[in-house]
Image (cartoon, rainbow, N blue to C red; front, side, top):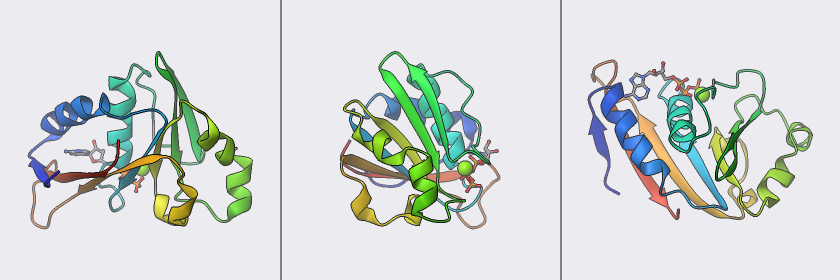
Length: 145
Ligand SMILES: Nc1ncnc2c1ncn2[C@@H]1O[C@H](COP(=O)(O)OP(=O)(O)OP(=O)(O)O)[C@@H](O)[C@H]1O
Ligand SMILES: [Mg+2]
């Protein structure tokens, strides 16, 4: 998909909520973007659109949060604070990936080498362009989903 620009939260939310229904299980969606770009906000909209509730707050301390939805669990991982593979073991990461109906949204996936992602994966990128308004964002989607 070519990059698109949205002027405000409402426009971005509408796009995100439409996109959410296209993610397939099992699947992994890597959320890319700088600090504060809106990765957690996107995860929150995706989870909400999929009926997983509205409580997907930024997992500041917890690396992993899980939301129950009609289509199955939705896992949200924020690897920002990941120090080593030991930390990953303690989140049950490998079991999350092994679920046949997995749907994982992952922030800071660049903390891990690419080869750990065994399933269909997509990348959703969100960026704040230089000189843009506070709620303006550029988004793009790539990969298989
Ligand atoms: N168009 C928009 N799309 C997404 N978020 C937006 C938009 N406009 C404003 N925001 C705000 O920008 C902030 C983005 O914060 P968020 O925690 O989602 O960033 P993040 O990329 O997850 O950061 P971190 O790298 O620290 O995890 C939120 O407060 C959100 O409401
Ligand atoms: Mg975040």
